[in-house]
Each structure stands twice: as structure tokens, then as C-alpha cells.
Image 1 (cartoon, helix red, strand yellow):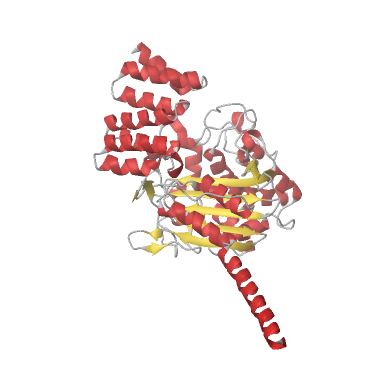
Image 2 (tube, rainbow, N blue to C red):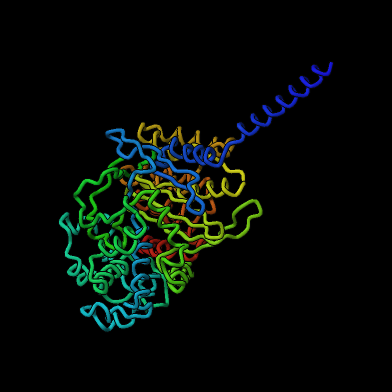
Length: 492
């Protein structure tokens, strides 16, 4: 009986242990939850790239999704390299701070005191700090003469530009506003910062960033593409623009014009090294960190976006340090949550991606909140219908979904608006139908009514276009572009 008793106890312990093991096995880890979340965006075609999540330098998740090269079916991995686009500005800022720490510049140094050729009447008003935090008042060369980014891309051809000649021609026009009084995101300012780095350091921009950051941190997978724009880089992703469920190659962009505002490349593992350096008091001075990470106008520091977000089960406010990059095929984000030293890096080579939604889902997982995987995009459904010339019945079906199954679908206003403009390039009638649908499901969106008005005006329906613009302006009296368009329509 004694043996049977102890056998029963042993069996009970064994069963209890198995139940505990099974319970643990059935609870997804953070790594598994992040994988599931990003896969849901990849599966619906809105994300193609690499993601990394780390805390205090320890990687929680790292992986690739979709393809680095779609034609050859080369998959993205955590080692794949991506153009960083405007995340490059954070590296430019750090390089400037290195020079300030060396006593070669100050934040109050005037532009024309460093670049002696720069016109003194405006350059004497502009400080290094104002160049870094986008308050310089200098006109953005990507918006010059009202041209689109595509037209600007065509203007400079394929040959590497002469940076000094470029700056003298495009970077010293009249000011848009008095320095320090307003904020306007400005690529010209960072182009000039590249020249300032070269002037003060005696190195090329590529050499300075490499010596001060990449080599010091062992970032062997990182570099500057602009002097080598036609060279092949091992493990570099090919860029694609996303047309909903289709991917196409972007127009050519002369990367030498990107220079210090957007010409760097890296991978997610190298960016962990950069992340950790930004907590190291031996890497930069406290003065430099304070300048970079203190919000100025529009919540922007020196090379960094600074924001606060409600994160975690208790929705505690956390400071976020971040920067986005976007250039045709490349959409990138670098997020730091300094209170807990979390790093989230999302790099896309598949055009614009829902980076903020992905980031929000990842932070839900990190802080123990429920999160939702991506739902099917209605815009993708309508894109297929547009291609198959079945848009009208598809819109009717999607209207029914909105009424009865709204929570099963993603009715992203941004994606639907983008679809409308995609259609407007070649099919005005379809564009009008799509924008009308958007106003039906977002009746309080001034932007939806503005886009609808534009499509109606393009279609020659002046009376209805006036009504749409009037509705948009009633919802947003500050819609100056809509006000101007309404005035033109009424005077025509």
C-alpha cells in the first residue's frame, strides 16, 4: 500500500508538471507575438522589409519579411541592408555634435561664418542649431519652384553632382521666414550641414560619418551610398514602390543629391550598436545629448523627433525618440523608448508601409497590452476591382461590409485616398466613385471632401466640386489650398 501511495503521489506530480509545461508552451513569447504581428502586415502586402526589437542592446526579435529582390526571390533577412533615407539625418546630427564636442563648432555658430561663400545677409542670421532643428527659414530644395519630387529627381540627371555648385545654385535663396520663428522640415539645411562637416573636419562627409560613428561602433554593414551610387552592395535590398497588391520599381533618383540628408544605408543589427551608443556618456557630451533630445518647435530636437505616447497597461506617458525616412521605395523608422531602453527598427524596401501601426502593435506586446494583427485592406480589394473593371459592384459590396462587418476589415482612409489618386491619373470616373465612397464612410473628414472636390473638378463637374470644397472648408476652415481652389472654381 505504501508503494502504491507514493506512486500515486509521483503520478500526480508528473501530471501537474506536464500541465504547467503545456500551459507555458501555449503562451506565446514576445518574439512569437511580434512575428505573428509583422507577418499579418506582410501577408496583406503592406510590409516588405526587416524588423528588429531590442532592450538594452539585447535582441528580442529580428527578422526579414518578403523579398530583398522580388525578381530573383531573394528573401529579406535581419542582415539585409536598406537605404535609411532621412534616418541619415540622425547620423548627420551626431557627426555635427562630435565636432562641437571637439570645440570646432558651437550650436550658435553662424552658417556664413563656416561657409564663407554663403550669402552673408541670410547666412549671418542662421545658426547651426537652426539648421539641425529645421527652423532656419531656408527654402527646401525638394520643393523648389513648385516642382514635385519626381520633377526634381529628373532635373539633376544621373551623373554625381558637384556639391558646392549645387549648394550655390539651390541652397542660398531668399528665406521663407525669419530663422527661429517657424518650423519647416528642410532637406536643404541638412545638405548644408554636410558641407559644414566637410569644411570643419577636413574630411568628406562619408569619411567623417565613418570615422566618428561607423568605425567607432563597429557598424560594418553601414555606409554612404552617394559616392558609389552605381556600385553593387552585398546583401543590399532592391527598392520597390507599392501599388496596393502590386510592386513596381521606383523612378531613378540621383543619390548624390541626397547627401547628408538621406544617403546612408545600414541593417537592423548595426542600428542596435547606434542605439546603445546614444546612452553612452563617453560617446557624446551631456550638452550634445540635451540638444539632440530636447524638443523645439513642432516637437523636433536636433536631428530627432521627440514625442510622448501613452504606453503599457497603465497607459503611462513615455518619451519617444524617433526619426522616419522616406524615399520612393524606402520607408524606415528608428524608435527609442529611453525610459526602458527599448529599440524598435522597421525598414521597408517595399514603398510606404504602416510603420506607426506596426510600432504601436509592437509596443502593445512589449508592455502587455492586447494587440490586433492586420486586417484585410479594403483598398486592396478595390484596387483589384479597379484593375478588373468591376469597381461599381465592389464598392457596393464594400459599403455592405462597412455596415455589417466593419471590424473584420481595414477601411484605412489613407489607403483609400491613395487609391483615389492612383485612379485619378488615368480614370477620372473611377476616381470620383472612390472618393465619393470615402466621403460616405468618413463624412467628417475634411481631407476626404477636399480629394472628392479635386476629382470632381478634374471630371469637369464644377457645381458638385464647389459643394465638396465648401464642405471640406466647413470642416477645416484652415484648408487654405481648398479655399484657393474654391475661389478659382467660382471665378471660372
